[in-house]
Image (cartoon, rainbow, N blue to C red; front, side, top):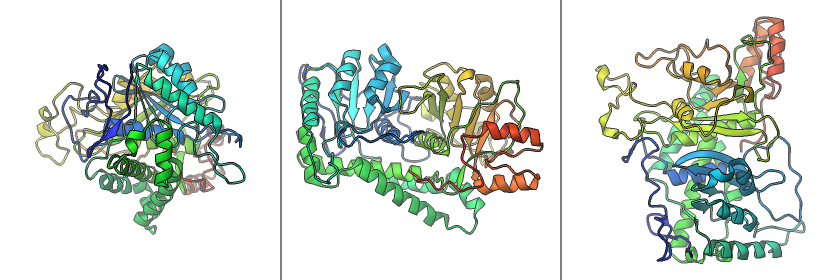
Length: 521
């Protein structure tokens, strides 16, 4: 069954199919949330599902590697990110590994479960991956319309551009596979909602992570600091995902069978939409800067068993997962604040994925119950005197959605970790502990507060869960000096023996006495 590529209207890029095709393109990708069946605005402009999945795929391409990969100057393959979606829910976040392309990773990780799934790639996948995914029975394959996985922009060591013969053959094979395949293979890059860019910038500047930065350093011009981080991210992401020269972009689109997108006004609209999405990603990533802050153990608790406590992930990976959660938060239905959560776990052996042993367990954002009408429920916060008109008894929290719609079982021996953009409330803390979550990465600005219908009193004293709190690295040093201890990795304890245990459990986190000066992106 032949399919054609997408063309872009003045509203969005919408796939079109041949007359014999019975699929609905992306018309059945409802712009309602995964929760309700009606269009919901939440507390501001929302990120569409398609753009959320696209941004997550771009961000996964940048997943920090534990060890630098050897770069083969003769290899034209580019690292790629992938989001696997089933029933409109994210069930997999992947990136290219040291030996495998991300499409191959998906086949290994999901196998027959790929059938009827939608895949979102940060680059057009190579023919080797494409043939396996088509064979697996995927429903749709969407990719970012930049340089493909088999790069057509590769530059030789002497600096001269070279179109690899292998890359050209791969482009021809991929086009033939696409034109003769059942899955819908296309480009879908929707424009961001009106006002979304400004909304993301404003909310990112004042999110809990940036607020902690401001509180810890009152003399810092937090607004200027945020904008410098955003500009830095924008330069890096633009170089990675955009093609600056229009003619070269047209040449690549033509070579990968997207000549329809080279016509005006489709081409200009496509490039504008791509720039806007990269700008959104730069804004969100700038809200979690690692220059002076990180996720450190704020308090130390004895292990509940004789087994050694699990270690924390690196600062770069912790930040990366928090940015995933922050992207999810822009799908919120909460009328006041968006919250996102992701759950990752560590497999028993090194994985084929670029994420190493880490694999996604679940993710979610705060929303009203599935299938309900948004207008049926109260939408006011604790400032509303009439408690019956407050939202708290109706909103499903991000942590609750991540646990409910998880893609796999939570195994305590695999060190499940929760990354959430706000401090868990008293309603969620028992669920988190009961589910077997072993680590929480978050902020604690609300910890200890009681707001009436929602409170945060249990988080500080939760047992059996390690808490890695976003804070300035020098805080841990000052706390340890005050306690008369000389710890060098952010652990704070009252007894030397306990401090030693915490030191071992926190080896993989960067030193709290030394500011993390690694690149933000």
